[in-house]
Image 1 (cartoon, rainbow, N blue to C red):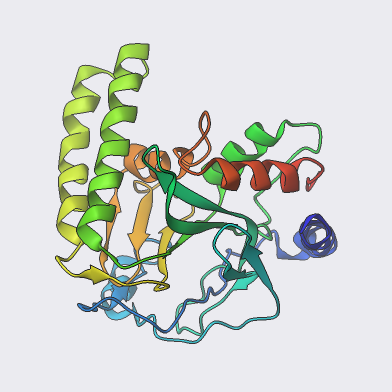
Image 2 (image 1 turned 180 degrees about the vertical axis):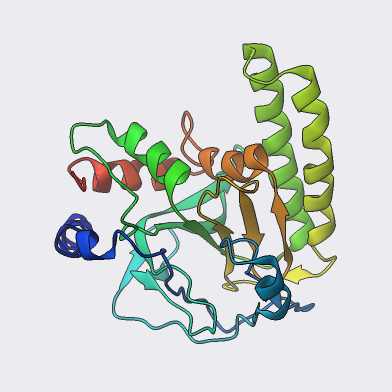
Length: 273
C-alpha cells in the first residue's frame, strides 16, 4: 500500500505544475448496489459549480467499480478497490485508497462494518510535508481535499442504526468541543439544524450485508460551507458537521482503530513536498 501511495505522489510531482492553473475535476467510482430507496445525487454545488449548472447536473451513482486492484480487510475479508472512479458529465476527483479497517461495537467485539478511507491525493492544492506527523497529514488531507469513507456492513443492519451512530458521534464531539472552548454556545445551537437534516437523509430501510455506502467530503470552497454527501441519500452543508464526521475516525483511537493504524502507517513516509 505504501508503494502505491508513493507512486501517486510521484505522479503528482511530475504533473502538478502544468495543472496548477486548472480546476480540480476528476471522477470516482461506486458499487452498483444501492439502498431500497434510491435518489439521484446533485453534485454541482458540492464541487463548486455555478448554481445554474448545479440545478441541471445530476449524477446517478450506478456505475460499476473500475477495479485495478483491491485491498482486503483481514478482519472481515471485505475488499476495497485501490481507486474509485465514476463516469459522469460532471468530472469529480479520482480517489486513492489510504487505508481500511473494521468497526466493532460492544464488549463482545461484534464486527459491524469495514470502512475504507479514500482521498484525492492528486489534488495540486494538496501540499503535504514529509516531515509532518501521520496525524497532521490525516487532518491536512481532510481539511484540504475531497475524501471518501466507504462503509460496507458485515451483516444485515439498517440505515437508521448507522444514522443513530453518526448522530451520537457528532453529539459527543460537540459536547467535548464546547467544554474545551472550541465551540461557542451560538455555534452549538447552529449545529442543530444540519444535524437534524442529516437525520432525515437515512431511510427506514435495510442496510444489507456487503452493500457499500460512500460518504463523500467535497473539497473546501471559500464561497460556501463544506458539503458531506451520502451516496444516493442526500447531502448536508456545514463546515463543522462535514469535517467532524471524517475526523472522528482518526481522533484518539478513532471510530475504527484498525483503520487509523493502517492510514497512519501508510502516510508515515508520504508527502508531496
